[in-house]
Image (cartoon, rainbow, N blue to C red):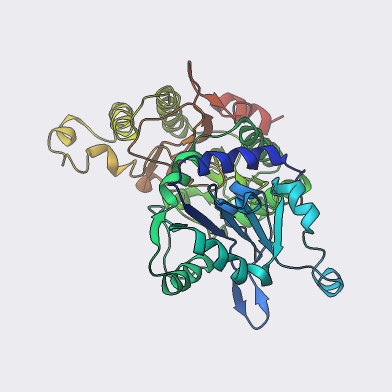
Length: 430
């Protein structure tokens, strides 16, 4: 792995949090992701399932974690199953984790090779009365591809039909949403790498560059700083492309007078950063661009003050809508008649700001969390209001990553990344 070693203490704490919420005489199973084929012998680069990584630190394919806190056999209360390494595998693919290395990474003492899984698992299930399955219950989860986890669940239900079934997701969503200090440090590292990428761009961007050239500059900077690359598919949207919320073609020339919307972020140790900045191609905002930009920035600055313990996200979004409504009136994009005649289910401001303001951030860019429960200290959110005016070719979104604190305003992991109009212009024209 490119990243520095993470202390096993983090993963030990994470497993304790999970096991403390399990019912008695139950076990939980977590599978690594598949290596997904493209065609012929080509595959998509491996990405570890975030849940098994969160609970073990194991960043390797064909791995299984079993947590069974009430097992009569103390050595079976936490068990890892790993793909057995060999000299041939080491030559062709590189070394895999040994049992000793797996313990150093995870803090788990009992490690078996994967070919022993069925035998050991049958023993564990004979002792257990129920099992926790790790289903993907993210509200935006794709369901078209059958995962390794889903294949395991299907087989397990067939082989052990008398066992009670429980869901890991509610526990995982709860504990993963509140970050440990070690996790905040990893998120900060990802944000710091993104900062380096933005600094590079502020000296690189000029009329005539192509969106993909900007993407390449970021990729270079990220990889040079021990990141695997982008935490999500980058959006490099110049001019009217910025009005397409998930524009990812990144294949247009950047013209003088246009803005570039950069929705980009580096990953580090599987943790995501998520940044949006808007930069003038020629280094100078027009008066209209500046007015819209400052309206978005004002909404962001006011919105993030509400990311405090006890806030309900649904109420937060309504208040952000009221802030945005006021700014859109100032910009003469909507008026009192629009507001009077608006549909309560789709307020007038939604014409120019149609997406949500914040989402959980962590091991996933759109991280897991419980949206209907009050915000807690230790949670990390984005704050990303935007205004999109297709008829003017202006799309502006501004986004930072924020740690909720027990007292006071949230801590901004991206506080040092240029954000003010004057700051951006000064750097670009230095």
